[in-house]
Length: 272
Image 1 (tube, rainbow, N blue to C red):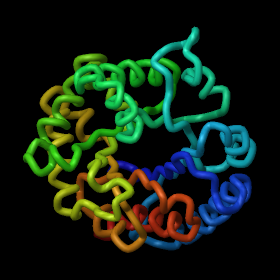
Image 2: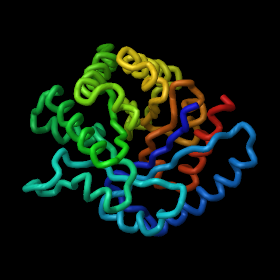
Image 3: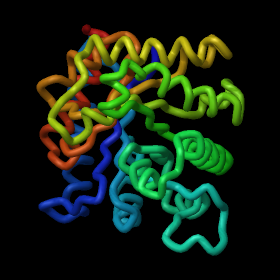
């Protein structure tokens, strides 16, 4: 049984309350959630990770150290050090106690696309960041998904297969055992639209099968989470699907009540 993961991506948002208060409230409610789950025979333990803007990482480290919560950054440099103004290296991230890092989020890719870099180059950048993260003991959450245009053209599997093949070629399929894949259809991010549970399952199953072509054992243990307008109202139906192992949560992760209810839905995955 793969342990569900719920990752809260704050993006470039400052909470209505202070970041310190939000972190403390999430920590408090997560402890209450743990107590509830221990009383639920059909519930499973889950991993919860938070991704605040990097300026809040010190607060995250101070507040969350010693708890069951994990934290990480929304990006990482492909380089160890050097003249890369504005970048953050994997070793720096480790100094803040991070366990995870997001790589290749569609909102980051859009910045590169404005530079007119083609998709092959973008995939190579993701692969280089992935290599750097794992080299420093970080667990990458690698984001992958199709645009509305790709979706309408029926190119979802083509887009996903392209990046998976680059990752496997870069380090081998076995290295993916240290990672999490996040399917995030670009047309569902911040739009209020969400893939149906059936569509999410179909794409996740394809991703797992693509990895299985190189390594069946890694494919079976690989966590694949869904991101794209997940809310407390639709979370349980999405998470109940056999190849969906949790969620990458955007705006809802800034609402403590909503976020914890999404986490609870992930913990009830076994209940179907």
